[in-house]
Image (cartoon, rainbow, N blue to C red; front, side, top):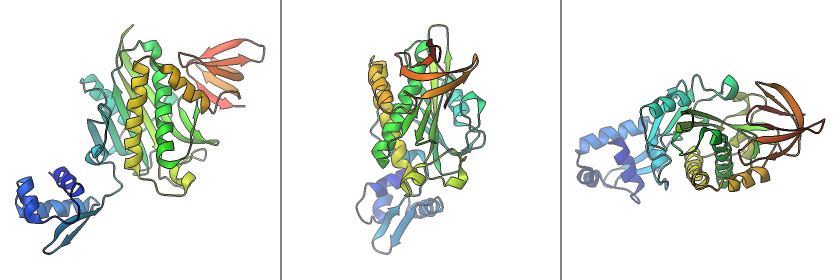
Length: 317
């Protein structure tokens, strides 16, 4: 019912009387008053003036599901959202929901994570209420071999969303990071459940540093607030991310991964650099030449041999 009250206030210009709300929402004025107190406790600034009624002055910087969905113009991404104040890992919860058959586009987000994780088993520092920590469940009709495309697609979508909301232009560090200069802004983690030739579902995790201060982050990381010197509206960034994800995901499903690649190459922090890639096979180094149609990184080693890497820890040398 609190969500209905907030939506009603957002759609009303000026003050609205308790009597009108009582009639429109089919509840007593006493119940409305009680809900108003609860909403204020959540951080909503609601003015109350005798003979005028109530007016929503400001909403808190909180990733409530109804706040994210209000005005969200997507058809799939974020139409179902599970929002938590704190959780061990959004990836784990999204994977559990995927196993239970949740619809494509389901989002799990949290204000903080106690066991957030990144690639290669690394932890992901999640300062509470300072970032966007979310995981999305996708059900693409693609073979497992094409899953690296979804990691790059997500990087493109996130970079575009950041640019649209802040004018910053993050660069994409293959295969799964966004950076500004030499500092890490965001990380992406992709996990899937699949059979030999068919993907059951994919969970794409995003960790984006939004309003974190430098002391709250690792030395090699940055945030949107640090870069812009302004506090950023997380809801707006989140909504733009979901819209951009839907746009680029549909591109991939329709066979237009080349457009994802074009964006990656134009905003790459990896290509044309000397890099060292560490994976299960050990270390490889050379010049990062290109990203191919599978999403793999092509490296020309010092002896002239051309090798392809589909994953790995990349460092510029």
